[in-house]
Amino acid sequence: MSTRKLLKVISIKLTVEGAGVQLGRGFGPGEARLLDPFLLFDDFTNTDESAYRQGFPMHPHRGIETVTYILKGEVSHKDSLGNEGSIKAGEVQWMTAGSGIMHEEMPIVHEEGIQGFQLWLNLPQKNKMMTPRYQEIKSEMIPCLTQDGCTVRVIAGEYTGAKGPVQGLVTTPTYLDIQIGERSPFSIPTEEEDSFFIYVFEGRLSLRDDRSEFWVGKNEIGVLSGGKHFTCAGGKDGARLLLIGGKKLKEEVAWRGSIVMNTEEELIQAVEELNNDTFIKKTTGRS
Ligand code: FE
Image 1 (cartoon, rainbow, N blue to C red):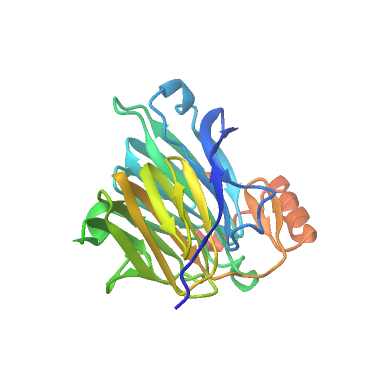
Image 2: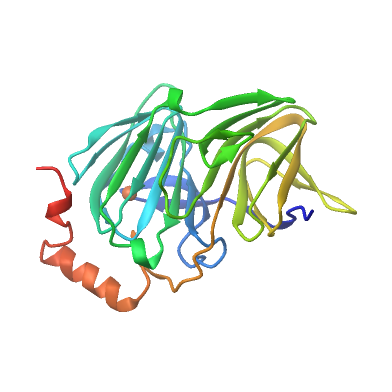
């Protein structure tokens, strides 16, 4: 059985987004082919409130899903479907923008700062204009399994029979939060052709091939090759990582800001709709 190999290690880069939020970008615009169907990955962890409190005021999304996972602090949100609330530590907001959503994401200043990640997942052409949907995942809804020195939270996909609460997604993604103990091994079967990457946010992770050992350290992304298995082990002080995977779409990508479609014409149309106030398809929203 083929084991996934480490193809590339990427360190997150300081990037300024929203109204001046300083975040660490793993990959994003211009790298749409790197990890199809994943478009962008940001780590917005910060203890300095001046780096995150400006937040992300009202902005549109179309054609993608955005996944926000909070580990410390809180992000308040409001959107054009009438949803309003906050994402707290341990919670996930899985938002399918589909035909269009307008929202704001504003971190709340807390003593402990903020720790969280945002992933953008592309939608297939046939689903880009689907009705927007919004899944709010509370911490207790996420299965948490401890075995062989590893603690795994299953947000999406499956691990040893436990299924994540995020369901009914067109790209059948896997999203696991894995805490690995010192030198403990971790292994999971994966669909051979799917794209997979890891993001290490604590400690160091060891990956082996036939001959050598490779390391992925804190704040680094490891891009993985195809394969039927992913296997790794924690370093001296263990490691904590996200393991994220999904089926490749293999479609054209046309990207402008927070809107990702298949063609330039669809982007022009989206901008026109934003300008003449027809971007949000009123029939799909709550009144
Ligand atoms: Fe957004």
